[in-house]
Length: 514
Image 1 (spheres, rainbow, N blue to C red):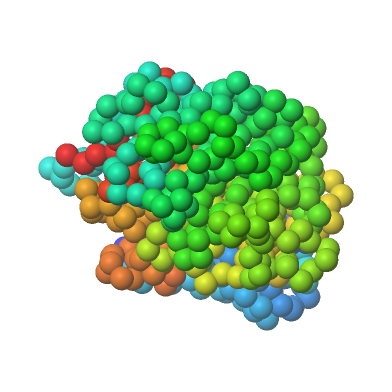
Image 2: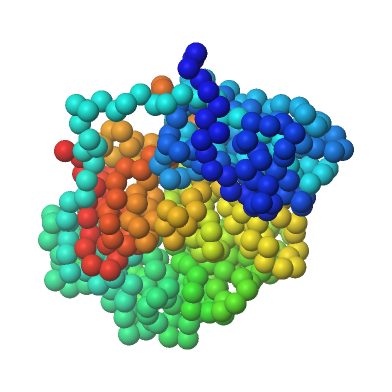
């Protein structure tokens, strides 16, 4: 690419620490350096003036003494979401050495973030070069994106979930935070709610009726599960049965399986989903929130706050069984129910029903929103780092039990965005429908505040699709549309169609393609 130039010279730099010297990393002078004046984990981000087609990134090391280092590079292709791109692990590096990252084929880049997780010295760079060329002018005759929102249902009271029972009935279930679940069939809302527990819960803010989940056996058992905040402020997991005709829930059939005390009205959590490969119920519980400094409950192995639980609720055990393959079943220091930990407020997680891969959005604190990924082959036990680390950012929240490094301690996300793009990540569906072919195999998620809706494609999907953007295991994000309203969730019906819940205006939308 003969027109390549160092486009980093056109960029702006931000850094975790050492902001006063950050511009030295892209000034073209190897004798001036950016120095964080601290040990890992630290990051340096370079935002270009506009997206460029990048062929190579060169990182010129400033380091004394020489020794082992680990670095991760994240890339924003212009969507506003940074995705995992490269990892250099356990390198032996020294001052003046250049690390080179090739993009073959070249890829659009708006921003890169380089995170150092391990180093024998303070984190520093002599120079960061981004070699690329301007993107070709857009084809003015090209048709703009045909993906849009279409009103599906209005007059819903604080909708927080759209889902289905997987029983072949084609019914759509809409969960309202104030305590009601309605059924929509053939575009018509049933006159009688499926479930109404509004008189036994606390609402609203981050409390109320959270989620409903239907087990694989629902067609025969007619039992289902809900999570909500009760009148005492506890997060409750309950099982209900339907009436004989299956049109409504039996209000008197409730069995409370679990109640988790909440120290605060925020981050109560409560997302529910059955694993497609194991049939167990996965339950998300937030860290409980706080008035001041974030609590360290997510790292406490004896608490269920800030965790994802895996429960066998269909075994007949009372109140539930714990799968023998849970990661901490033999560790007396941990609660047996824990599947993963280190989460702040996971909302709207989802499985890929075809592969069993698990996508876990986690709402951030002051700066980063993150999306975590757990492959189907995982045996659990992942630690996503909160409150020690927030995405790629170390919040510096005071004395914590772990150093702020992901090297061998925490499991990093696969995507993140900062608060210039929104305020709270929400999930989420792995799209397997047929109406919008370009989204097939992608995880669809949104931001609650701005209403931006993105798709995320994992590396294996890129390779199998033959996408020209595939890039040696790099994840890819795309901004597919903006809802221009608070989005509380994205759900699906039995045919795989995508629905967006407009939280404030009480409208459910269908994502369509012209």
